[in-house]
Image (tube, rainbow, N blue to C red; front, side, top):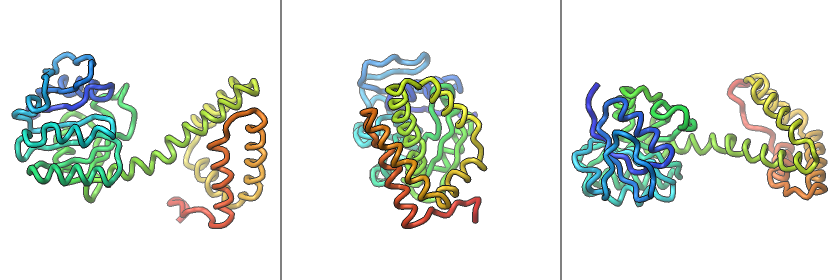
Length: 266
């Protein structure tokens, strides 16, 4: 395994765990974070971003989405030409393209990295998708660290786009469960509902998921009535029915437009 000089911008939960994995894999890790956070063992913490990137061949930015451009600009001119800049932020396609253009202006390879699972419990082994001019380099290097990497063809933004599309379901699912549990708490049956939800989700397979979606086309009128009753119940319980109302609108849309093509149904 080659020895890499890695700079990390951001030592929050994800950044710290990935830094620990890099150190364990014998990478030389330097980090900068202006926040008062703990420095993982083996990581050299410096007081300025320019100091952090000296002699770096890989720069990893693991920041909040709003901080991604600031993180790059804080030391852009100091990063050695030919280095790999990997942005792990969850961001829009437009921002990823902007970051890629800035990297190219300094002769850097850019990797649009999308974390595809939570980092706690996995650390450096968290699965990612990656796109951009530095995607292949990222995959080659991080396979040395046993990180599962899926390269997405195309320019920067392609990996983030897929993650955001996935988030429609993943974050929407969490929001639906939260709304259901709020209502169940008021109705006095939260333990029962939680057990029911977790049982259904843990036993789900592709057959069930396909049936849920395709069945909506066949039974949209009946399901619309059911969800209108559900929305009325939540209003009675004084629970804001944001997600339930959206489901009502979605079912009305299905009645008018049908459902998208499901790959297993082609």
